[in-house]
Amino acid sequence: MDKHNPQLGLTVLNGDWGATSLSAILGVLESVFKELSTVTGQLPDDRIEVSRWRRDHPLVVQGRRPYKIYLTASDTYWSQYVYQFSHELCHVLIRSDRFTDHKHKWFEEALCEAASLFVLRRLVAAWTQAPPHSVFKAEEFAPSHGTYAERVERRHAVDQETSLANWFLDHCEELASDRYNRSLNGVVAVALLREFRKNTTLWRDCTALNSWDANQDEDFRAYLNSWSSNLAGSHAGPRLPCVVARRLGIAGTTGSPFHRA
Image 1 (cartoon, rainbow, N blue to C red):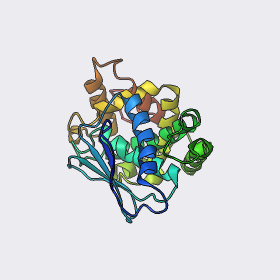
Image 2 (image 1 turned 90 degrees about the vertical axis):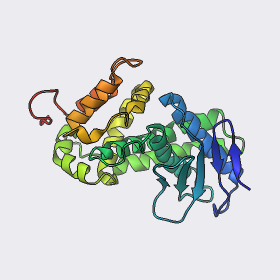
Image 3 (image 1 turned 180 degrees about the vertical axis):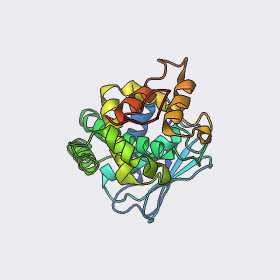
Image 4 (image 1 turned 60 degrees about the horizontal axis):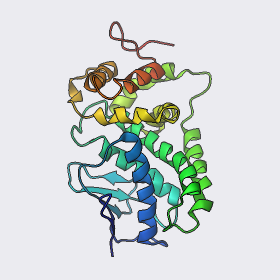
């Protein structure tokens, strides 16, 4: 039988999840939901149904309500559940399906990858201090979330002799042509992760994404400017677009959008 959390609008559908229980899975996903919704200050605009499938990658179905999220995690690989669900939930919270086809979508993929790593690290403390009751020995498992995050972050490390700005200049066209290139958007994700860990309120700026049609933005600098404009007058003004521009070495509003650091 499916497991529901009516308060969060979250349901885990019965299926071939392996050697675990729906109650335990729901407990894991609730942990993710609470972390991301708290830091973004955003709730989904509809219910979320989570199913398991055997394809190569997790997915949130575009343009469907209630939201339908498919995960590939199974058994008691809790960190994998966290990693996958955080990414797809981030897509939901930033309303990725408002505008689905523009060349800057790679940034959303990087952002959702950062969300996965951010939540994994947050749950080390959360599961130690207040472990979900439905997850057997969750407090003992908690450090494994940090280990999982560290392993992913090492894969996306940039050569220390290469500045992130120079790396981005070399790869910006490739990013725009393939939003799902994890080896590339993962590098940006790790850079953003450091900023989010220093100031968790930056997540709130992400909720202004997809409030305009980014097909009008000729390059990534223009995309950041549009984002800033849509944040103007909000809680703290446009902060995260400026952070991203600084980290990626993107110049201001005149001249070439990119420069070598």
